[in-house]
Amino acid sequence: MRKTLVVGLVMCLQLGLGVAAADSTRVDDERGDANRAREDIDYAIADHRKGMLRHRVTMYGAFETYNPRICIFAQTPQTAYRICGPQVYRVRDDQPVGTAKIRRPNEKTIAISFYKSEIGSPNRYNWYVAVGSNAPFCPDPPCDITTTTVHRL
Image 1: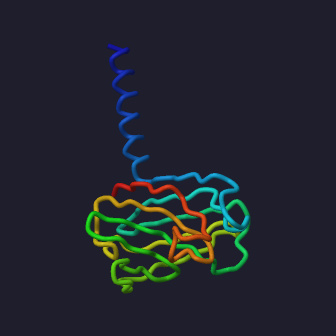
Image 2: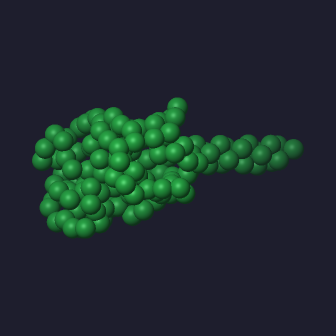
């Protein structure tokens, strides 16, 4: 009886942790793969809370400027979006469809958040981050990009 209870408790904890872990997605990026050291991505994290999609990008070194060239590319089942600075754009016609909030928690990190509805309220989307002087047009160089990753909502 006691062994069954312990096994059941462990299974419940594993299921609970699995659900919590699904709320965020992390992508690590290789050091030294950018054209410029200050545009080298360390890792990026996507999560969601109360209708907001949140992305945090951390660099190996400090950003050179307060407003660096950084974009989140999001591909939903319906269409593609580009979140650059405070704007959310639909890629196919380059039209702004919403706004994003930008924060700088520290000199190596930038946080970008926007409402799920601004990219069509999908239940999942593929995303990657691009940093560099040509970020809105990546993957054309020069820029550092992360691997494309699925984030389930």
